[in-house]
Image (cartoon, rainbow, N blue to C red; front, top):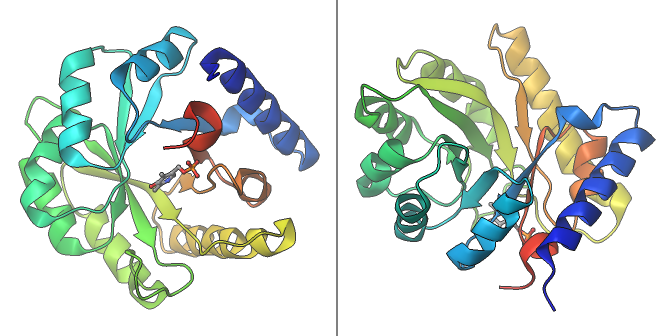
Length: 226
Ligand SMILES: *Cc1c(COP(=O)(O)O)cnc(C)c1O
């Protein structure tokens, strides 16, 4: 039986343990509950137990949920692939976008962000393992893209995001996360002010925390399999 309350408290405990093991303050890491393909009832249940940040991958599904729940307390993160004809509806409904990987998309999101809204928080997705089938900017184009995004009026460039190739061993899992950490450091040396590393999912969040994750994106460990 799915027990969201128990899953949430287990996850929070595991996060604290992982943070303690590397002398990090657990408060500097936040849990993004990835609710794609799960019904709205489960989101409401997680929210009732104190979870406020939710991540969605599919625009229409996410927007339907946002419109239905309509709560000021919830913070919605778009974490899926972005098609340029969907930027307006994303800019109108979400608080964060983790998957910006080209300037055209960033420009559209900035232009289409409603005037009354606060600026949209953005992370640049990096194709950290250079996988052909995966989205994300190439490391070699990262500085230029981040500098261009930083100029856009209605976006706040917060940091970097990655989805590494699957690795089973903790030691191996740490490598791409350590690489993303280094890239963030480098960008900040270029006068950007990034404070976010969105990295780590159900199978590798401990390794991500070890390497400096500030947002871990968890679906399965919280809501069960999809
Ligand atoms: C589905 C998804 C997650 C959550 O994955 P789990 O392995 O279920 O925790 C995190 N990030 C992104 C981008 C996803 O698409």
